Image (cartoon, rainbow, N blue to C red; front, top):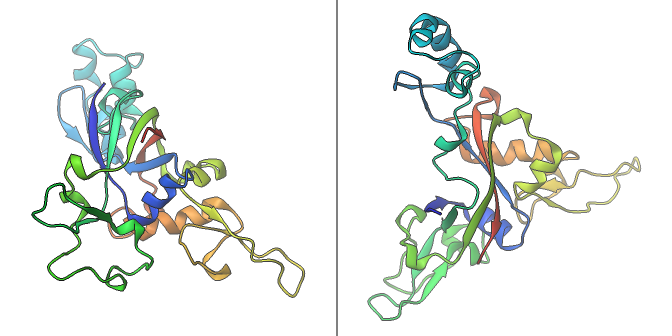
Amino acid sequence: MKERPVLFSAPMVNAILEERKTQTRRVVKSIKSAEGLAINPNEAKLFASEHMDSLELQGFDFRSTLLTSVFHCIPPMDRCPYGQPGDLLWVRETWANMAYECNPPEITYRANSPSTDVEGWALPPGVVWRPSIHMPRWASRITLIITDVRVERLQSISDDDAKAEGLMWSDFGLNRFKQQLPGWHWKEGADWKQSHLFPRHAFYNLWNSINEKTHPWESNPWVWVVEFERVC
């Protein structure tokens, strides 16, 4: 069993604490070819076709796990950087030490803020929010155990899996045409204009809120799907 850190935003931390989030999707950044080269998943098919002869000479064929994985742009599961079923993930989130230089420290968490704006929750003088990437293990309050790992295209997500990404439902009632207003969203305080009838559409908004600049929904990247349960 291995233990690794994983970053989550404040809304997703709350979704975990409320047991709404049991999955996370992370972009597959690269895979290792049979020749030991790092290649982008989008180039995997081209690589396999160009190196067919050399791969076969090395003793690989399309029935081998490695070559089949490369050809279909799917890296072997044992290369998931987030771990394997049974491994632990400890959550890194935005935090602050309210009793700086005191022992024991007094930790508070951005996800507990009553405001969605970091500036909306005043901290004592001299105390500042610290980025999640700088959270040490001892300050983490959430530990997860991985129950499943797989790879798929982002847009392959089902409505059930979209819900498991931490979505919430709000009943906005009926409009003047007696139609049910959309209710799936990921933000606290969202109104019906920010919600959707189908969970997949709400997850689209969630994904792009985090990844639009680098891996937008429209690019349909390969993603690691990590399913988990909360341990503590």
